[in-house]
Length: 165
Image 1 (tube, rainbow, N blue to C red):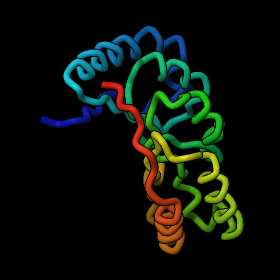
Image 2: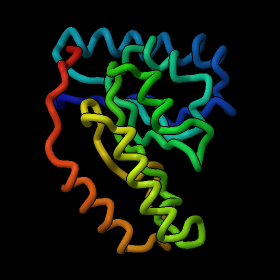
Image 3: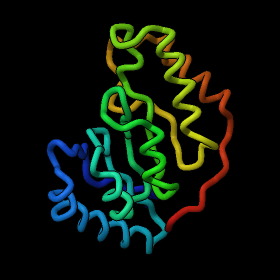
Image 4: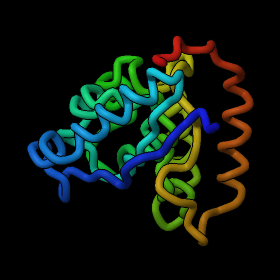
């Protein structure tokens, strides 16, 4: 008796264009979402690709959790743009691009600045589960992972969101 069902995976507008998503993917997500919501359950889907052009379709698809949302610099959209498009209707799980944890991708100063900006974009934290988007690379600097944990703890508890189901 799970509370959350994961359906679909790795949407990317360079592979599943918005018209393709609307015609071939969205109807199934809506159908599953309706069935799950009738039972008080949540629908999660994996969204770690390039989401430009898909965000409004995600909202219309009525799923509850966008797993592994990956903003810039790995994709074209900022975390703030994604939050604004979801307008409190979809919970973001992720939000911190995996390349942030690589010294080859950004300096320590850039990493710290990125974290500050990310947490500012999170707002009050409603409908947000902080995690590394995509996957943690083997070369990730462990001190940066610990810094993310510390920043999350410092951010503190967040208000509970109204649940859709």
